[in-house]
Length: 285
Image 1: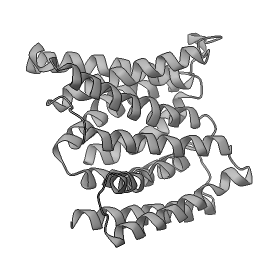
Image 2: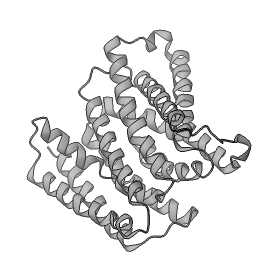
Image 3: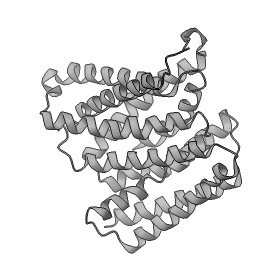
Image 4: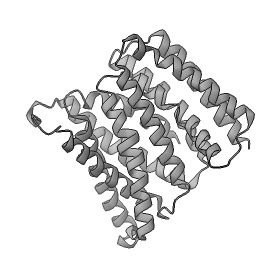
């Protein structure tokens, strides 16, 4: 949980620096394909090639979850951060536990009234966070992309607990990253991101940020998240959603000098408080 809390909170800063000089989906594809191959090699080395063997159903489930989490959830965030501050993106993504509650309700679960109250409070916070897009301070399209990304990430997280996933969480994480990375690479090529790409023009800090995202954000933190999805209650795993934004907002302000406007401070406080209500209520059930 500590890895997911801190390391993942810094990835929003890393993404913002990467997309300064590297196209969004190509960078996401390179990130997850590289991390997926490294994790595959690590699993084979530490546990033997037999640990990578899965059924067709398990492979399909891992690929689907990887596409939802990494192509949809992460890929859209990378695209959005070409126009949206990293701190604002992290605060919008903090809504993930709210969508998970609604997905559970749609599948027949009955959330506690306090949980539903937390969802309602969170929706109010999201409305405040959207103000910068409506006022023109940031691009509204970028804000909406992050909201869609949070929905797709929630769907992937929820699906991982329902589908026949590989028994080994590290194997699952490897296949998820490979599927998500290939998906992001294909989307980048279809969008024409390779046209005019000059690797010599990529800044040193973008390369460093991409390397950090591969080693720490993907190989370390996403693997920890995959293990948690298989080994811990989803309500506990979801607590990262109200720690990551705080880390991301602080790093964005300190390193990139991102403005802390009143919608970001007020809306972010409301969303984080709402997530805290949801998670604390669910953990007692």
